Length: 483
Image 1 (cartoon, rainbow, N blue to C red):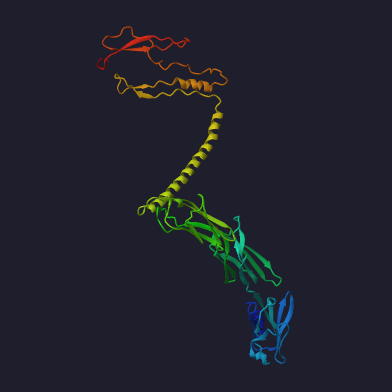
Image 2 (image 1 turned 90 degrees about the vertical axis):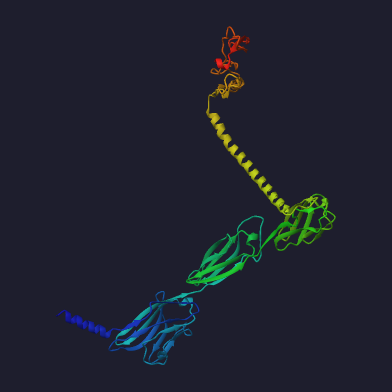
């Protein structure tokens, strides 16, 4: 009991004399806008007397008075906030003793307004009570997209260059820039910190200029906080003419009329000059040039056959195309001209595939040659392969369906001996050269049978003799039923 009684009276005293200043902990606004900084006083019971309310700005540890409200003296706003700060409650502006709500309104925000603001109440007899709010000031960036050059000219080399630039200037915090385009390019982004604390983001879009990039749209997307800003440009790319010739349908025949060739050119800027050339001599006398067309007057004759070239020129360069004109005696049947055109394409495709196949085989053979040379160099002692022997059917009348070994070719072994011999030295293990009849019987029959068929053979020579000797011997072949 002795401890609980003092604690109870202490709580009553603190509750009776407690006051509270209510404020937001954080506020934010954009440059040029206005923001309300709330401040209200929760009085005690019994209430205390409010003598004065003072708003201060705390920056780098230093306090600076902004506005003062006094029940007797009224309201005072100090420089540099005099034209931009006011108390929101009319009761405060009328010099009334009611100062429980002293919210201020700050107009035309500046980046320098970013700081901590203190609302301080001076009361009697409780003394001073205060609270603080942190004010953050944002700066919306200015987004602009421009072409690097009003006119971009395709160069002789295919290299990337900057075609457009997107700038998100003086933003706080920094923006994030991305590009939307169908082109195969990329953005190069850099950030610059300005003296006032804002950040400028610059992104250069780089791509290889070509006729495909002409009239393409680039869109810069700048993401700032939760907002997105977009700006677009259209590329103007100049390139030399790309030319094709129309008019020859593959069915120019004798006495056909009203034929012409037309030169079509895709160019930027437009073609300023067309020129036709005939590669087979002098241009036919019936040919007349009209702008981009070559018109042939009168009936078609064999003299119109040949190669025609069209040159189209603009300020960037010159593009050319050619066509081979053929003249037939009679017109082609219905659909035959189309078939001839398709066959022409098929023949061209076959030629291309044949060239590619030959190139592939040559390359493969070149790759295999080093491997074969390596395998030959690794073998120190060549081995003479045995003469190949294949089995063939006996063609005589005695052995139908039987097989015998084919006589090996002596020249193969002789050639191999010479090939395997170096410096005309005789190989120690080279096989002896024998005549191809070595497999026949060496001893002839003494007496042939009268009923049989006598066949004369030449005996093989003795390999020990230098000069082969011929011996004749006979053998009687019995009929097939007696064997």
